[in-house]
Image (cartoon, rainbow, N blue to C red; front, side):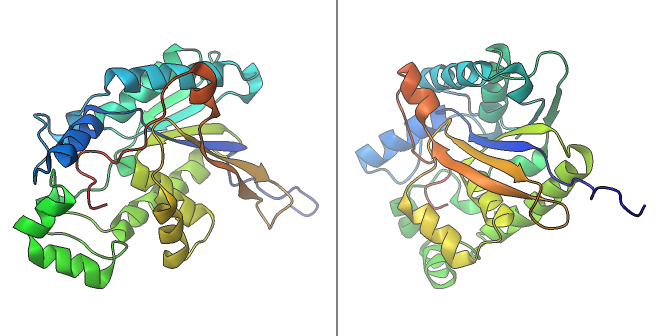
Length: 259
């Protein structure tokens, strides 16, 4: 209708959080310290739980969200189905970190961890020892495009995240959305939301890991473009943990040695 306001497409605010430290993080550190090829963890990746420290980090982050005014807390929570991400989201909710009057909690498989196929649970040295052909393919193609047998490339993750963002746009415009996922999910969402190149997102990745329970936040600028645009407010923000005295960890998960 002529003279009507443009349709708002995006959430008012979007927080993207990596899950708290997991048992996989701990197992990976132990494997590297011992110079092992394989990471010793009994669970399938979807069932890897938070470590006790990861639970502490999640509580600290939940209290930080709870300290926001009620009208600024998340009212939509989208989480990876992996146990460590779901548990992080549940703890944030239990600590009062989401809008208590009315909120939506959705488990979305498109937010799951990158799948590593035959390279699952191998350290970098293990990949070079047991799958030297894949180590060479990765060197030639780069991790953005390399897809190990039975696994995914970063491009594959980006493809499913494009769909997830379309769902957020369709169902949660105008909301305050919290996504709880994994390191590669955080980076690939940045790639999409900021219209990055392969080179740019890999430069950001090379600067350092996404810390457990760190916050990446976008805020809507309604004056930008036809439907407004989400603008980066902070990345890998650690104050919620530091203020609470919770140790900061940034190790990749057990299966992410070659992410």
